[in-house]
Image (cartoon, rainbow, N blue to C red; front, side):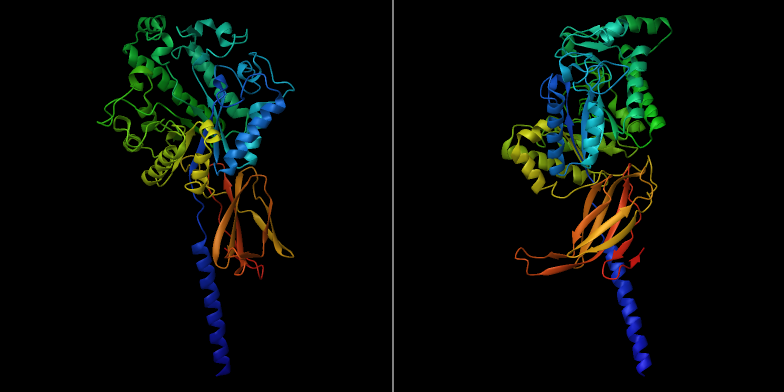
Length: 507
């Protein structure tokens, strides 16, 4: 009888522990997934550097301050403008150093450093993706000083037109234009450890850049017709941009498949789509058929600039977002751009938080937004604080991109060591080339939480006891931990739960 009782107790103990482990597995939290980005504009020194000609140290200090602010407020991406006017905020053999760095186009920073290399390393150390933002057709900006001899304006005058406002613009229909801009993209993707390539809404220029007159490409269109071209001029212009967008996507994937390609077009495709929408017609004025790019999946993320308020009927934020989602036939990431600096104060915070929550509700499988621009965050303390107390309270991973890669990275090898009142968690990556982030899960008193760490992290020291109350009267012991790897496209490795007390583990 005693032996039977002992067997029953053992069986009960085994069943209880198996059930407890299954419960632990079931309760392991899924980290929040949401794209949280801010644009950092360098053209006209809008965001960085604050003016041309700063020292290297001053430029780097300003960059670190911006990235630290994003990290502190639980952002996970930055969209950094590296080609504002057919120039480079990085070492390039194709185009000159940017005027907006030094005040002289073609002059490198002194003491020398590569700003893009610096930004990438600093962003990744803070767990932020870095997407390079390029303007494919703007040759020279009115605030960009004198074009140098190495500017495309001087080197290839056959590719550019000077517009009435003073801008120089590349002709999108010219093969030389497409070859140059495509080669710039390829060069950056090949040489730099970036996470994305980004274009904004500037394709053919806005009409006011040329005093309200049409883009001066009559000679190019006449040559097209002479060679047998049958498309109307507007369709022909759109086709030039379409061909280029397809080409860029292929170039990126041929170099590094995990590098995402995103575009942030003007937020309205055409007036009347949907019916209540009124406003600017990018299809007919910028010759950007943004709907086609989304329909065809020529991008990995689509970021229409929905810079209007929720209750603005002719350009309502949720109405436009819903229309774009209906056009998202390939189910790419749809992360709207927000005008996050609409005036500051409580009304500003309410509007932006409402737009974030609407986006989450309408796009639950892949939520995310981008904030125009980082200045809205640096200047509006209330907005920063309200985001951090509200929708950005916890850290979040960038949503995965399964069409690029859906294979899980390998699990890290984890060991634990007793450090008196703490536990030292140490791990070794199975393939550090594939790992981009790590997640350390900790279970105190049956409740799991997690910490997201960057690609360089290899250890974490955690206390053996946490407290369930502010007075530190109710202790919660550390029961178990787990460490997973996140790869460049957002896939998470398998989970191995390690029980702290007996150092045992279960898959």
